[in-house]
Length: 288
Length: 235
Ligand SMILES: Nc1ncnc2c1ncn2[C@@H]1O[C@H](COP(=O)(O)OP(=O)(O)O)[C@@H](O)[C@H]1O
Ligand SMILES: [Mg+2]
Image (cartoon, rainbow over all chains, first blue to last red; front, side):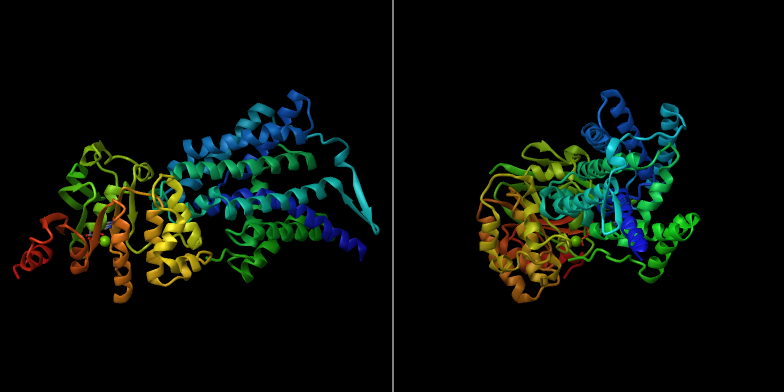
């Protein structure tokens, strides 16, 4: 029994990481209806930038975030204004094709720059530390990841619904033309949204890199997990995205518990079941 | 009075379709003019051109001596040009208050503030936290007008504010107009309802199939002239 409680707890904490993968995707889709195929590779890019920073400055991966977060945000803004804005329009195909191309370019660039050897961020003692209570042992790093995910979602929720920036995001998402005649430059607003999304991605990438080893090819898998978490939770709902991440994480850990080979399959099955029962996800955005 | 806005042979196209043909128009500072014309005449297209949603050659639209025809809509907004769009077009995911705040985003100084808008339309203060979509049509129109005023514009364009509203609601909105333009604003009132538009304006332009078919002082134009210009047939 306690064994299964442990599985559920671990799955929930894993879900925090998936929610971090998903939050940026969800935000970008919510603001500009862009499905970013390169999102997973951007997470991996953040992990590599973290690697370079930790090595060059000889700092802990968490400290590296001080460099990687603004760097990723800057890359996001430049990418949006320089490339992605030009692909947005009534046709949804161009952004899909361009971000797919970007995904390929990123993977190859990382391969050139860092080789295909698996790398890992060295988090030190925190990686193995664990807390135990009532026969249940919980890793400190997974717990921290989950807490960060909840804090991140709460922060994004606050930005979206309580700040002038978030009001601009919602207005542009509702009606680009009218937002523009209210004095908002949508190209800039989209740039800020991508910057924010990639700042979150930086955190996701660092936490991922401390948890497991990574190589330039793993982006696609992270994209799928993030994508599934967004769809399970319901498009446009940030707390839904967290719930989606948790459901995916729990399904995967249960699957892995039954048979290690079933981890990914169990996640995909949970995704398909939710999609079949609730095609709009569990918490779709309600217009209010 | 100096010219505030001038249109020089303004054309507009939607793909291969030409919607406006060489529109010439002049607005003096502080003037209220009416634009009338049948459905599809090109009124909304003209307002979209002025507000920058449709881009033109720079010199086709001149505002305070500055060519603005090629400017992006957000740049035009910062110059003090506001639009109350046809069909209200509030932001559905923003509350009443947030819609108004967004209107104030350009941050121009002037007499209009949230309090002043609530003074003009008190019902909006009661509904300030509500979703804009939960309001009646007339109340939504008040939000749309308030949202435009929040920018403290020098020039406002009203696109068919009476469309789809009950006569009593239309009356209350038009009763508020003198308070609005009394602040020295220049206004362009677009309507299909001719009598309403004429009652508040000093000059009128009639559009017909993308061209100006009549131009004159409101008190000089005759009923027959308007019918002729509006429908393109002798009455
Ligand atoms: N987005 C559009 N695409 C193509 N044609 C349009 C579009 N909007 C308006 N039109 C056409 O342009 C002409 C003028 O329309 P509009 O400016 O909306 O007229 P009005 O506001 O006077 O009713 C009409 O023939 C209309 O069908
Ligand atoms: Mg119209």
